[in-house]
Length: 218
Image (tube, rainbow, N blue to C red; front, side, top):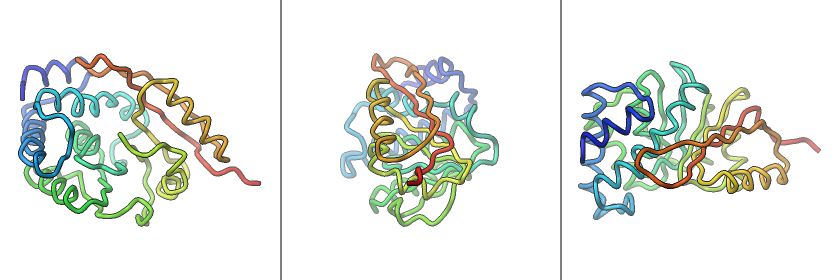
């Protein structure tokens, strides 16, 4: 992994870091490289591509998490998979706690191994489908997950009444279309779609923030 690329990327996003943060991310990418041939965690095989397309992509929402969450909050990462964004956010937001919800056993084992190797004290793994989790969170997030209208009922069951959803999406038009379908399914919410820039990636990305999300009556 190109350390200078990582440092430059974090600086462009505006994320404070130290040697511990850099070391944890390096360990994380190394674990992906080690287990990817067997576990098929990500499609990219080059460590710098993984750094840009997955690590920095996950980190690019840092400003949104700083605005919509606060120290001490517990944030659920739905379908955490290879740990994007949950592991990355755990590293760059050490004063928040993260619950990585993942139902595939081999990925659960991978995530637990990464947490052990990095010594992350603010991340835990739930070996469950999101429908089976019986806990409320102040914030939920997801990246490369199901469309919101497919999992709305399950996601709402995980959110506290004043909770916030922060979802990684692609192009703005696609995110807006997804929200339109969600409204058509009978859900009310306040939504903000924010453009985000992933360093060294020439692809459009957005963050979709949902507040006051509920199922309309009637």
